[in-house]
Image (cartoon, rainbow, N blue to C red):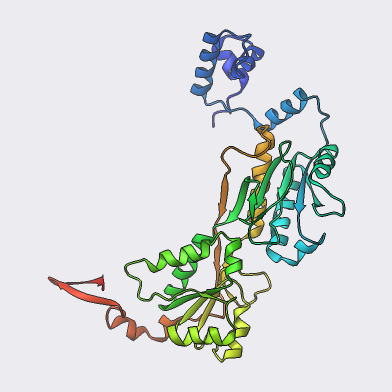
Length: 370
């Protein structure tokens, strides 16, 4: 393999010193414009790319700041109580992934509570600056969609999930929309056809309604054999849920979490004998429950990557174009669904499923949507 091109590689090509090449690539006026353009052309030709860690180091030196042994990134929470965020398993998993990635990259990740008694946005800004904090990782908020009051102009900032509306910063999120597609695909592979969506609307609000969007788009598929209205579990009681089940007769349900299992058991809907259930946010404690692991640890690590990239590029404050880093979920099999195809192989070979009619074209049979 060819060695990675360096400033010396360009200097040798141009017949100049490394210092002159460095100045030219930084557009310093001490170097004539024609020479700067020639140096840039050579750099492009040899495939030279600056080292971001070196760039960050030089930014530190030029700013006259002392170089810390390890940089500092804070995990800023805004729950009513200092440790209230720890009651949410997804946020805990975000934090675990972020802590590990920060350690790998040489940073400490310290927990800071924005709601300390007597705390103001100005005081928090002063505290963070005095501690030499360079990056702020904003934890998900306790409410579905909200904002935090903090002057972030001096910091590299990112968040996780969609709960933070303002300030508009880079964010790492689970690919909720695609999680619905994946879950429906796996359920259909098992032979389920009438798949309903029953979830807490407030939970989907935290996900910018991506679950709802994914489900509604799936029902626009011309080959869809059923169109079941979404049931909001926060409206009505168990009898309302029972009525929805009786009216639409799904053979499987997608839900936000496993709490629906207890309600179904209470209503006399055995899972999976009568009804398959898969969840879109499978918790670590959901033993035996089928659904999507949203991989929050990877999302947390991605948020740290976004912050460190800003530090290396010497970027601070609200970005002109906020980026969204998506992490796909993975399907986890479970005992709450069963393979309907395995129980009725003959029925599947008899012909097209309900809602599909066969048309003959010569010797071939093709299926088209009704």
